[in-house]
Image (cartoon, rainbow, N blue to C red):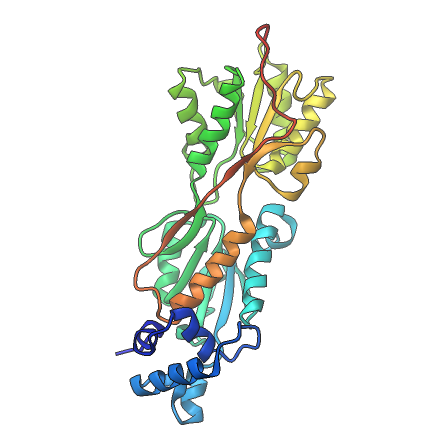
Length: 344
C-alpha cells in the first residue's frame, strides 16, 4: 500500500503541509523546526515511505517530477492576454516549488504521435489550459494519471479549476438590466470544444438573464465574433446598420470589445452615451480602453497557481477525491456602462 503524506502527518501529529516541507529538497519552501523535521522523517521511515529508502536507486525512482502543458494552440500562450495571465500563474507557481514546464504540446501533437511512451507517467503531471473536448481529456487520462484542467469544462473524474461562466454572464447582463437597458446585443463565439454559440455558457447566461426579465432575444443582435477583434468589429458594424439598434452590447471576451469599440466610434457614436458596452475576462488593457471597460474579472493567475498546487498534492497522493473547483468572479464597474435615461 502506498504511503501518503497524510499517513505521515497523522503519525507525526503535524499538518500535511509541514510534512511536504520537511520532505522537500526545494530551497524555496518555508523553514520548519529541526525537531519537527526529525519527527516527520522518523515517521516516514517507520511507515516505509519510499523517498527515505536507503538506496540511491529508490531515491531516483521518486526523483524529479515533470510537467507538460497542453493547449489548443501554443501561440495562445504568448499572444492571447487571457491565457498568458493564466500561464504566468502556472509557471510562477511551478518555479516556487522548484519545477518548470518541461513540455508544451498542441492537441494535434498528442493525437498524431505517442508522445508519452518514453516518459515515466507516474512522475508526469499534465496541465490542460482552456476548454478542451471531454473525450480528449478522458483519453489523455488513460495514458497519464495526473491530468489537471484549467479554465475548462467541469467533468467527472478530471481534476479542474475553472469558473462558472454562465452565472458570471448572467450577473453582468443583470447589471445592464438594472441600469434600465431592455435592448441588449450579444457578440460571442462558438467554443473550441465543439459547442455552437447558442450552447456556449456565456450565451446561456445572457439568455437566462434576458428571459428571466421577459426581455426579447433579437436574432440580428446575437452574432458570432469568433473571439477575434476583427470579426467582432465586422459584426458590430452589421448591428449598427440595422433599422433598430440596441442600447447595450455584451461581448464574451475583452478582445472582442476592442472591435466593438472601434465600430461604435467610427460610426460617430459615443460609449456609453449612445451604447453601453460590457464584457468578460478583465484582461490588463481593459482598464486603459477609452472609456474604461466594465467587465467580469476572472482570476486567471490564481487559477493557474491553484491548479499547480493541487496537482502537486495529487501527485503526492494527498488528494483522495477528484476535485472540480469553481473560483469566484467579480464585476468590475468602469465607464463603459451607464444608467439609461427615461428618454432611452
